[in-house]
Image (cartoon, rainbow, N blue to C red; front, side, top):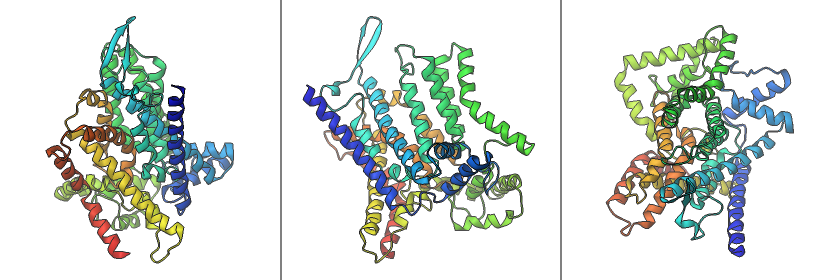
Length: 472
């Protein structure tokens, strides 16, 4: 028995070490860990340390605050060194992968429905514990998919907001599952777990404000299920969730002398997805709009972009609707024009050095690891699930994913915006892969339908890969 536990512990540590190596490989291959938005976050963080003021070259409130504040905390403690901040984010990424495995384990344990009543409490037994598949409440398949997701590995050293956002969101769901009262006929949970969960959700809005509509609905559904008879607790928890957003919005209102919600880049995000040049994603054509606002203030730019975006929707409803239809295809593509292609885009034709070839390998790894997760998640929802309660017990994660996608549709999308969905796609994919191998006849109509949906979602990728091969 001791030998089995030791082997499982060594296997777990081996997975974590390999996941760590993958993330440091991404760090090594990356042209810069301050690429794109990361440079702006770093600039604000440095200003916070030097002057105590939250300000960057883009303005006083253009960037959501929590990522720069997070970086400033690291710089204040460990010195102004972006490389050290990248290492801290890599650690967060590893912790997130383990939590994904724990969440998947908890949901599956309850879904397998081996319960018995004892001393007025419920003991939940998982058949597969006896088979040695798990180690201390971790779904090995889910944690493996998370550790070897090349997308999560790429974003972990890049000082953008995705790693912190995913960590806070997953941590929120992790605290909720520590309670168990989300599930029927279960013991009531503690106030601390709920408080920490909704505080994590509230803080995640300060990392990516576009998630607010999705979380408003999800938090409401959770509280409605748990506290429909206790309105006071319902209100207290809801206030705890929205408090970070309200406090930062008050700060902005005091500065600009008019209401400003979290950041002043919402107008730009809306305009990029809704203008005469737009196809629903960010591209070079959209940058023509920047020329129109060169001499405007930060707030004037935001208002201008909102007006122009609404004007486009009113005058060209057919084109606006076509953009909405296009947006999911950009969202679920492997690569686009943003940070998700940072490493593979730096590949140099004719350069046969080990590092340059490793960039190409990393790009292939991104495609294969993401496609495995995407197909597994699709198959989970399409397949004949033997454990239907898994869907019911993971319903809040399904709601979160669905409402997040819907919240993006008024704006623009590209593959980077699906990174926050990956933890939940991994949980669904781990069960979908199991469903596939449990099928007696694997290549059946459900498989073919799943494959058809999969191909539809990656049709843009297929075209991009053809162009890439022709180019190189």
